[in-house]
Every structure is written in C-alpha cells, then in structure tokens.
Length: 199
Image (cartoon, rainbow, N blue to C red):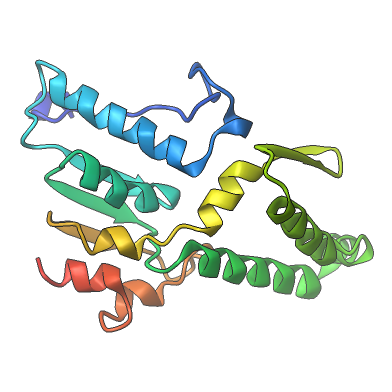
C-alpha cells in the first residue's frame, strides 16, 4: 500500500495487545476519544496529507466514526456492517436472534444450551448490567464490561449521521446476523442510506 502512496494506521483497543489501559473499564465514549486522538495523530504526521484522511470502520467502528467526524473532520468514511438505529434497538434484536438460535439449535450443543437455560441467563445478565453504575460486574464467574454496555444502550448513531458532510460508502452482507441488512437497502427508513444517497 505504501508503494502506491497509501498509509494505513491501525491500533488496538485499550488493554488489548500492547495498548495501555483497562479493557473492561473502557466505555463507548472512551473509544471515541481514542479514535479522535488517532485521527489527530495522523493529521499531524509529516508523511500524511491531512486533507486526504478516510475512516475505514467495521461493526462498532461504524458507530464511532460519525462521532469522530463531528470532532475532527475527515474526507470520507467506509462503513462495513453498519447500523443506522438506536443501539438499544440493535442489541435487543441481537439478543432475540441469539435466544432463537439457542432454542432451535440441533445436536449436542443445542441440547446443552437449552439444558442450562442459556437464554434466561442472557436476560438476567442484561438486567444486572442496567441496575449498576459500576464499570464492571461479575456474572457466572466472568468479568463483564458494564459501562460499555450501558453507554451503548443509550447511544443513537442517527444523531451524528445527520451531521456527516463527507462521502460515505456503506457495505453489509446478506448473512450478517449482527446488524439488519435492510438498513443499507432501504433509503426511506435509514438515516445512513439518506446520507449515502446524497453522494
């Protein structure tokens, strides 16, 4: 890529790889702060043209990128598997998909999930996260990032998509089970597609 004049800058989330910080105490808005810092670092680098910076984001990164753009302007965004609705709606839909899979999965794995009532435990964990102000909780012996979950639940990316003024391309797959592919297909129902259709 560098031989063709492109530079890429990638980084790990807090507490992952060699990045400092605590992954489990990192909230959604902390991730936005980190992304803004990365873009500003790229803009200040002597080898990078600060007027030709694009964000390439996947999944959660597609929720972060529009917010980043409102704080430090970029020239375009490539959004892979994006969502264009309040995140609480997406996560509720994701949980329903997971529970349906747990209830219908065949074979030993499906039987085991139903035996341990994994779908009920998922609901119980979600309620516990909402009842606390702590950054982390313990559930069934596992450490859960409660702060990240709570901040995600209250976030609505549409508020920021309306402010994006750079070119955007949004790509998703027909078998994606994490986001609703229809949001990329139907411009009437999607703030994301309203934005993309303008370019």
